[in-house]
Length: 194
Image (cartoon, rainbow, N blue to C red; front, side):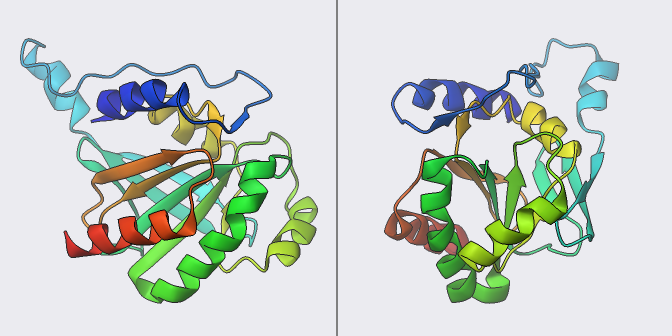
């Protein structure tokens, strides 16, 4: 699954523009969960759960559980999850924020948006103005684990990147670059109907 996401990210990266990350700390991790020729111990290793404790700009801790099927945030099960990888300095990221605010408001508890900050050493106090400017109604994840999550998804190279998971935590689709609100809305409707 992660390999498919990585290959898709690379293929579309050349077609869609966005902000390029300022640093290259996210080398892709190559994984292959479906290779039946691997020894059994390696196949079973892929099925293990991995947990990340992500810290939000709101001071809360968010536990992300990832396994070979996809990922879930503890306490947000049975919701569509939208992971918005962004940077505060990125113009397309900033342009997309009002759309995400509108979608979170429209769908309420059926979806949960998490903005994943791809800037190192940014203090939560520095995000206060950004949160107020866009009237954000969803958390910004701001911790070193953001980069581990990026690596697990094959390395986020273009900002914004929006990754959508369905209610069961399985990968649904992704967008590279700022996507129109109508397109995101239609995608959420499809994911909810799945």
